[in-house]
Image 1 (cartoon, rainbow, N blue to C red):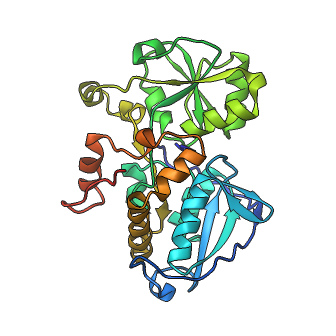
Image 2: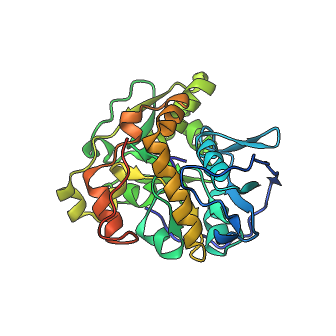
Image 3: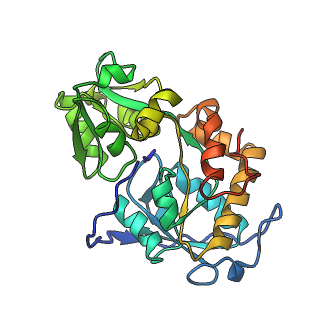
Length: 306
């Protein structure tokens, strides 16, 4: 929810729609921490996870988390000897739950941004997200110039809000969830929708009646971003899992498992399973390492790659 520039979180009371417990077999492995008491979780041995219904990234089915991000986290929890306790909320609730430490981690297409990094901790990226667009039919949209003056849509709080505002003469249409956005793209009320790329392909398969297609935006150049910094979110971006500031050990442990999954091929298999190309999703842009080093990573950190 590819998920996915960001404006500050709205203050709102987030209704928890459901919660379930997923018990995972305890095991250690590959050097991962086996003492869950030392991982800064709210409760020893438990991992409280906030998600939203956002397939193919996250959802609940028959009392268990499903989706790409869910499977990545389940693999990490198993290696770290943690039992997952999911809580279903909305996107702002996912961010707010971490920032107030009501949950241990939030997952599901969350984009790394400097603003969010000031209020929480980000793991290493489990995958990267190319700049995909949802359009109706064969609409020809490729460049920033093609977006000028168009009706552009995204979900409230997603990374594309600021970028859309930076497009000359474009009108921002903001939605509480992706369903409303896709409906308006399908009807022609919105020319281009910006959401996580796997969600577009998932919706194409689930709702062929909408006539939605996936297009990829030619990313703005570094020079264009220098002139208008908010356009940076039209470039490929890093997704990450979001962890409270009070849980640096958990962030480090999960990041370690993520790097193992790049090396052993687990991430490539999962990306392929959910309709993505590992060459698109598991290779960082050159600037990503520098972006993180300047904000929340040491000088010798390198963005993981397949």
